[in-house]
Amino acid sequence: MVKRIVLTDANIALADADAVEDACPGSGTGRDPTIWGLDAVAMHEAWWRGHGVQCVHLGQPFEPVPGAELYLLLEPDQVATFTLADIIETVVWSTAKAFRVRIIEQDDEGYREEIVRSAEGEVLGIRRRYARDEWVGHRVILTPDESLARRWAEARDPRSGKRSVVDGARRRIDRLRVYGHCFDVTLSEGRSGFFSWLVATWEDPHRVLEGISAVKPGVFAIADTRIPDDMICIEPAWIGASDAIDAGRIVVGPDFLPDDRLAGASASPAVRPRPINEIDLPQGRRGGRLLPRQSVYDLAKRSFDIVFALAVLIGLGPVMLAVSVAVAIDDGFPLFFGHTRQKKNGKNFKCWKFRTMRRDAEAMVAQLQAMNKADGPQVFIENDPRVTRVGRILRKLQLDELPQFWNVLRGDMSVVGPRPSPDKENQFCPAWREMRLSVRPGITGLWQVERTRAPGQDFQEWIRYDIEYVRTASFWLDLKIIFRTVRNIVTR
Image (cartoon, rainbow, N blue to C red; front, top):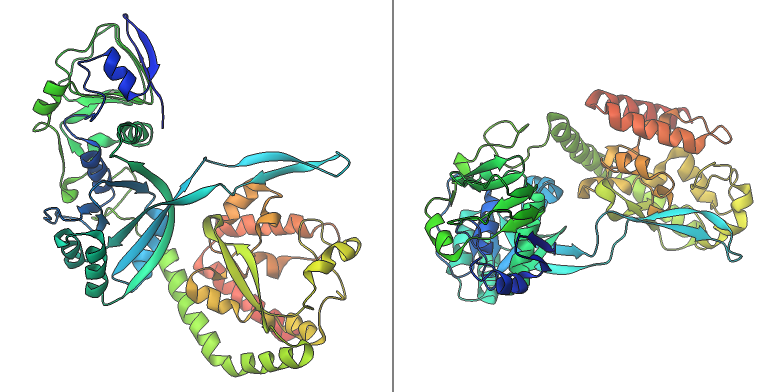
């Protein structure tokens, strides 16, 4: 929660909403603050309208808003926000009729850097940690189906509502997990905290709310509000409805002045959330949709990935069966090895391969580190003693990577992209990490077909070619990389 700073010529207070209520009895803060006649729930619904989403609350009247592309099914007091772009690709491609979304709260933003020392206290380097403490906040349902939204609105309680949605979707429901923010608006601090979050993050409320405007850059108020000449207002800030704003008041953003109780009630007819089909699109967005569309390249690439992966899995099914038998005879079970790697946006997934190493291979890394010819965090050892007899053949022909086409079907990977790598490898170059994790990792890629394996150059080449691919990716480049990969396998 962002603390509110209110300074006047009469007092200087740094306090929560209840303390401000005592200091300024007529301010309208306290138990139920409103801004422009809208409480936290109404403002939450307006925020989602700006993203093409209509909020539907359990057991409350439901009337579809023209232009709504998705419906967010909520319990009466649920207020939750998340970045729709993080899951919209799944929503676009999935055949599900509804999505159960778990909103994951985090305790901080960004990352932490810490010094890494040896047992003797010697500084070994700096590690950047992206993992954060997290916990499940709200669970909500997202659906593009108006009939499911109506079922939810007509339900008596959450349990019967969920059952009704599941039945209406004919059990075609997917589960999604997304990072976001949840607020308990049954509490005063929850309502104030949500308003503070909106002020700090919502840059264009006038696009959605009819009747307000920017009275100065980053400061929003009802269109005809007169700001005193001696009032200092540091953006971002929202000025609620008031019959008279105190002279000499100072507002330090991100902050808001709530409605005066009487003025707030009269402001309600003047300020209203626009229907979604009347909302101006954000700058840079094209077409008649509010939800982001995939680019032509993204659509073509994903379509190609699905068709190519299915063709490989079906066409090479007998080969994969033979490989499975060979692995089992050579070194027993398990047949597959799943290593935790990071995919697009740094999320972890299991990258599957046929097992080509001994079962104790991970434990042997420290013993063999002196033989490592790679100059970076990865391990490359000529005649690696960890590799089994069958494993050497599979690696040479790249048959060990065939199970990764299952990862492609799932959407974890693409046929072409940067090499999938674990978190410990991505720590070595954070700026490069962010760029390469902006796209799906690939089974093959520019680095795989261009690298020279020159001593002391492998890691530099890895960075160079991954960055080059992300900057210049095109469908034509993907086809060239696939052709060169197949040619390399055949020539071996």
